[in-house]
Amino acid sequence: MKLKNGIKIAILGARGLIGKKFLNILEENNIEAKIDCFGTTDNTQINYREETLNIKNIEEFEPSNYDLILSAVDADVALELKSKIKESNVLWIDKSSAMRMHDDVPLIVPEVNMDDIKGSKIIASPNCIAIPLAIFLHAIRSLNIHNVICSTYQSVSGAGKKAMDAFFRELKDTLMRSVKTGQLFEHPMACNVIPAIGAIDESGFCDEEIKIKEELKKILKVDYPINVTAMRVPVLVGHLISLTFEVTKHVSMDHIKKLLEVGGISYTEGLVTPVIASSEDDIFASRLRYNGEHDKVHSYSVVIVCDNLRKGGALNALEIADKLYN
Image (cartoon, rainbow, N blue to C red):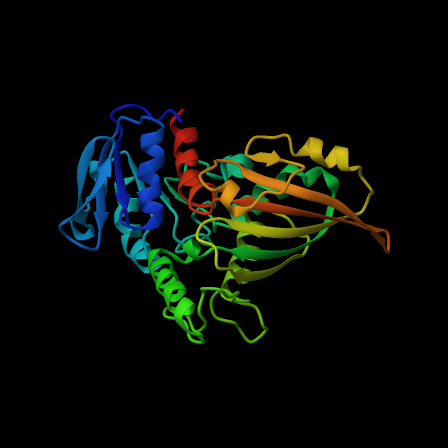
């Protein structure tokens, strides 16, 4: 990462999990930037390099003072800021769900669709599951994909800091007694699997499943079916995806693995878990296998894992900025 020295960066939502990860990655890459942090709470501080940064109230935020704005705030806050930032003509990369499906806002995964930016100064970074899925499906796009079926096993950190805090409390309570009710969600996250993420609509799909499907369609511009089941699992960091893809022509395992030799993907014959993927930049694929043929359609399955706070979160946004500045 080679963001120019002296670049002025505003980080909105700096106290959250993604906001902190923005700072961690910038520090790891020795980016000498002028950084201001903003949040909804006054008189708090955060460390960057060997400095202590004061987190300013977001009401004081003036976008024209910066070269780059990175935000990981609630969707309603991002929408409130949109017109103000748009007027400033400053590059803004937003991690919230607020504008991902807006026609005037490109939804970007650097390995897939940087050309969609077309000069836009407001860019949305996708859902933390849509990012690894988009990278993988883009890598195998030449296979003439017929259908995609996936189940996601998403860590607690995907629901934010409040969810992680509730998870730790629930773990403690679960060790002492049987817990049937969650502290943040209807069901407890500790020692449990919640087979939906978000509200379930009349057709039986939950919010997360709809988001993933819609975002992938926008990023990849494909018309094949994408079927998703989203679940929350008692893991701190790291999302896992069980993916089955169907193609119209049989291809060898070696050919598919060759297609995966692209930036952003690491394929391994061994097992990869969320713990292994933690703090890694790549997404990991393993357990590639051929399921057989049915009605002239060939089915393959694979397991994909990524760090949802890193590549699924802050890193994707920073890589967009890096490509635009270099």
